[in-house]
Image (cartoon, rainbow, N blue to C red; front, top):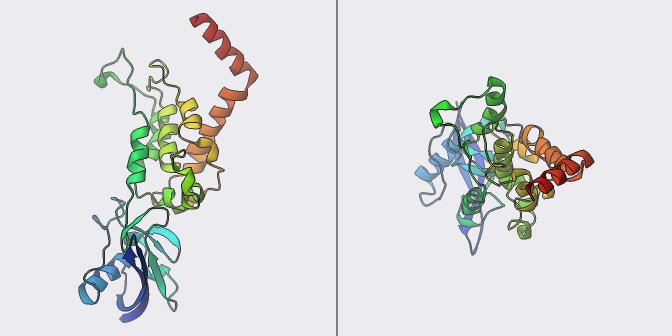
Amino acid sequence: MTDQATFRVWRGDSTGGRFESYQVEVHEGEVVLDLVHRLQATQAPDLAVRWNCKAGKCGSCSAEINGRPRLLCMTRMSALPPDEPITITPLRAFPVIRDLVTDVSFNYAKAREVPGFIPPPDLKPGEYRMQQEDVDRSQEFRKCIECFLCQDTCHVVRDHEENKAAFAGPRFLMRVAELDMHPLDAATEAGLDRKATAQEQHGLGYCNITKCCTEVCPEQIKITDNALIPLKERVVDRKYDPLVWLGNRIGLRRKD
């Protein structure tokens, strides 16, 4: 059975644009990306859209469908209102290059600001040993496909351009949290305080845990509950707990 859907697609570039309406055939079992490809093949061959795997694992086809950040390849047409126009726009938090393609280089810049895993100096790579519980704890965060939907929906980034310089966003604060809880990360021994940098360099304090990032994650990572909130708790303990503060002071004096 073949139906018709009305697509309202944003067309334009960095100088401006407008919505164009199209009638597109819909077949049973299709996802939005199928219809975008059909639209390119039949009516809009110059429509720019970024995609790669069509399996929900590369994160390339991020866009906004009816105002909600989603992957085009993982949004089934059957899950959308059948009798209403479907509006497709580029990610709102990032500059438009053309049509549905945005410049997400902000995210790569933030990734470079997070120091990577620092291995223990007394162990060779083949000698790393971890408890399975610790592996499971951080493995959730390794499922991230870098679609940047969490970055797009985070209102700290989305609604306040001026915050971008000081705020890494949920994807990269999650990376800091993962490294901070890694039992083999030797950042402290190397003179790097991940808790301090989370607050002072990556803007953890800007996050007010609305869980909007968790809601749009296609990998169903509990970004807020399992990464950001625990990281906030550890930062607060480090900064305000009197016993921790005293221990740090004693430690500093011993070094002196």
